[in-house]
Amino acid sequence: MGRRGVCQVSRRLVAPRFFPDNSFVLPYCAPNGRIDPSRDWFPTRGLFISARGARTRLHADPWCSDALLCQIVGEKEFVMYDPSQGPYLSNAGKTVDVEAPDEELFPQFSLAHPIVHDRLDTSGAEVAPAQIQAI
Image (cartoon, rainbow, N blue to C red; front, side):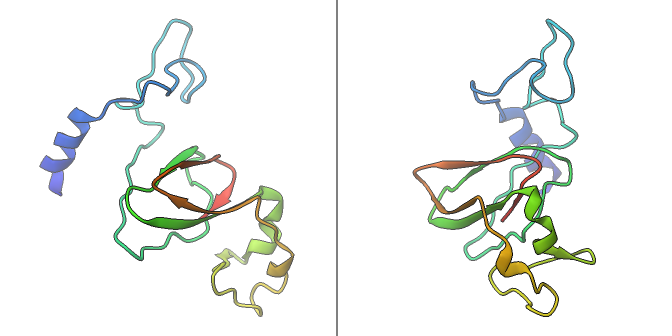
């Protein structure tokens, strides 16, 4: 897309009407102040678009941001784990591949229980809270 394309998208980006624009978002906004998610970075913002067959590895958002996931075409498997399941999902800085777990590296993975295991399609959206590990 290049820098020019990014600038064109940024100018057209408008926050959905249901996004808060006050102190309920980070960074904290003083009373009567306004935050615009299409303009202000928290510390980052992004629109991630993937081709067919793309996979996202199990992860917690590194910036502790909540995420809204929407599927434009087709469907995607969506799995979320509570932070309490962390000991079953990681080992020495490595995170389990939930589709093909290495039983030697993650011997307790079978004890992990997702709080959501669903298929996301074009008819809905999923919210992934910041502290949750999701794919």
